[in-house]
Image: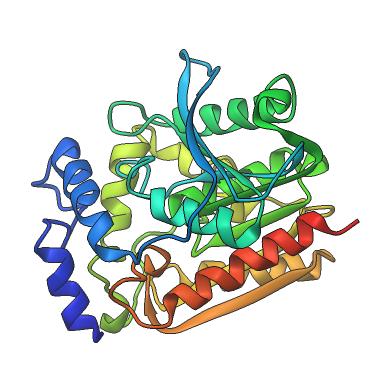
Length: 308
């Protein structure tokens, strides 16, 4: 499907410009929930998708545990962090993607419903992410069936930035990170970009709206918890699979992080979705070939986690 066609498909559900200032957060969230099932292909079968309550810094957080078929006993687990610019996205918008990851990686996936801006600005999402991982790597491991020696983290867009942050902050406990067109920094937002990179799910202009919602204190943008691209020490970070989109305002920062990781001695597999927009992991029903790219990423995570 050509870009103009998938743009029209998205616009039908009110997500043509989800970060527009005249849209309210509840409106944006509901529009994306409504659209999500129509934009993805049907997920492969899994054994179960169960609600999980995860202790958090502001009370219990909702999670969802995806268990693949034919899996018995403790094993590897992926903590998944959804995208949406810290403002939209939840367990429902990324349900199909998490099911696909669990099925194709053949490992458990624990998705986290972290707090969203503008109601909960930075550091709420960061605090929730760190708390969820610490629980998974600690007292929650038995409940989840997680082998704490084989934990991975994954996320798309803003969730990819949270995953990268987590990979840095808990590097000794994470063996693999799947970063899907990650939002790696909020310092430089007024960037020159080709019009072709201005997608209907994400644009360079949207970065300003994201920052205003997520960062009431502008100076926090340079904090590595917000902008993990600025972290100086990348030694010992987990093996990385970085999935990029060619038509994406975040393309350059993904390339920059890839190069810095490799310079630090981190093993990185970089896969570019050519002629694809930001968000294509959730657009397998409207963009041919994208399901294969998602499956490729999932298999890479699963293979790495099962490796002795």
